[in-house]
Length: 112
Length: 112
Image 1 (cartoon, rainbow over the protein chains, first blue to last red):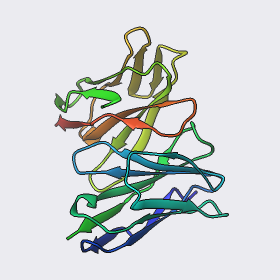
Image 2 (tube, rainbow over the protein chains, first blue to last red):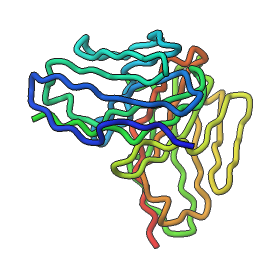
Image 3 (spheres, chains in turn orange, purple):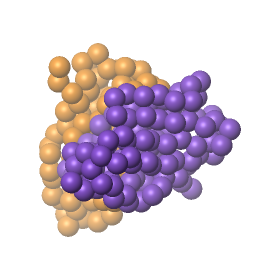
Image 4 (cartoon, rainbow over the protein chains, first blue to last red):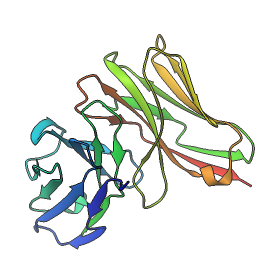
């Protein structure tokens, strides 16, 4: 069975640009969460979606937004990129919230 | 404020030895405590998890010990192998499951 997939694998942007990251959950999983992992730190929660509804939001500015589609895939959008947004962006899926979360390989975003 | 505190930051163990990583938390609403293993350039992989109704859970060479009164839990890796060299993260979540709170990570190196 395919695990969580994310695209693209790597991305280089310049300050002020916009980026869209994509995630496909494990088949049958209805909950998707997004995390930001800065080098040398643990993942920090950004959003959780379940059944296409936002279930939780972490302490991130409004430049970050996300959505979940009817097929349970998800997009994370970041506007007006800053140098500090450079990180590994992780998507995790679970059957339902508060269940085992399985992470994808991440998208490495570099902002120049 | 770090919801889950993890120590040590780094750990060097001889092959065949026992690796021990500790985590502590304050929020008594946490009811799910997973451990993740992460290799460079990869997403975190779920290793083992425990809920507060048990004090210990063992899966192969990996054991979680949980002390509810002390609000601490630890990961023990028995017979550590060079292939176990990775960064390990503890995490915690509540029954609302909106997000996982991660520790800061422990870089484990197993010397052959």
